[in-house]
Amino acid sequence: MEIIIGTYEGPVISYGVNLDKGMVLEPQFVEKSHSGCVKSIACNNRYLASGSSDESIRLLDLHKRVELGALMQHSGTVTCLTFHGAHLLSGSEDGTICVYQSGSWECKKVLKGHTGPVCQLSVHPSGVLALSVSRDKTLKTWSLITGKPVHTVNLNALPDDVIWNTDGSTYAILLDRKVLVFQPHSGKPVRTYTSERRIVCCKFLSSTVLAYGGEDKAISIVEIESNECQTITGHAARIKAIDFVRSDVKDHYILVSVSSDGDVRIWAVSRDRHDQIGGTTLHNHRPVCMCVYTGEKQFVKQLSTPAPILKHQEVPKKKTPIKRRVLFANLHAIQGGKTIKRKLKHKKRSRVIPLSFES
Image 1 (cartoon, rainbow, N blue to C red):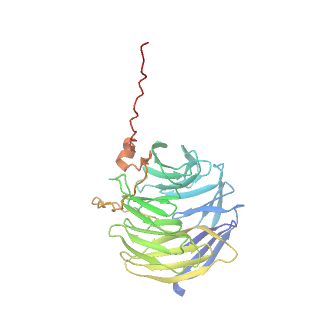
Image 2: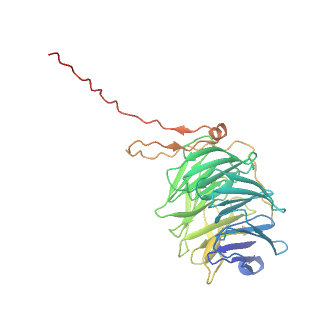
Image 3: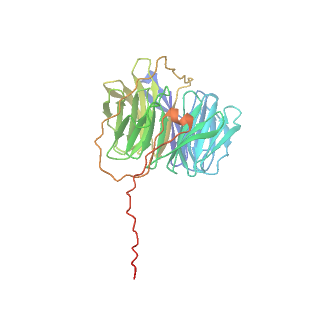
């Protein structure tokens, strides 16, 4: 297992986990090909991709440990990257999403539709749909078959992240200090998790376990079905990124977190406890993003039975003026191209009838 970190200064740094020495982190390589801040990073079972403010995507073969070159399709900072199957998807501040074929690195499609920078994107485990959020305050659903947006939902705040869970039955949207969890059967959030300070990152560890952290210097791990929560503390600065590796033991995970002061920690997490089992500190570098490389293919677990339907949380209603807003559409409405709108109620105004007087 390797922990690969993109930094503000430009280098991409890799640490290997030495299991023989008891989860000791040892430096593997430092890649200095970027001339700007590394904003995003992603890897699959062979390749590593890093996106930067220098508008390029640098590629590395992790098997041969050789650099493969750069992709220069975008005309803005590369803000997000994700591998899915034999494809690499990238989002940029130029408002476009590019789909590349892994290996040949040919750009197969350019998805256009956002009018602002793309913040984050996430591909459904089936590979048919993708979600993206942008600074134009929209959530778009894309058909990866046609390369066109099939639905757009207006958001009431600037989004930071969007992620599918591991089996595609749930997705979450990160909005500043809130994480909203949705299921396909409902357009309203089935779970809402809030923090007193800004949430920077979130990750689904399984179909029902969500982890998130941010400026409160803690990591919260919640079971969305039972709403059970445990909090991991230990970092002295805000959490910048989290990633995980599945354990052979059911409901056990190896969680990796990195904070803005360069503190990297490895946690063994189960349903009712967590323990730190390793870590290191980056010197003279400020972490921005991170991914974990295992060299194994990622298989999507298909549901043999329908996912359980979660009940909506009971939130006390606040008396607020009625404003026009578009609610989050569910997956069925997305495929049918429908939106859910709230109608405005207008007060009837009395008509003034002029009076005429006869002389």
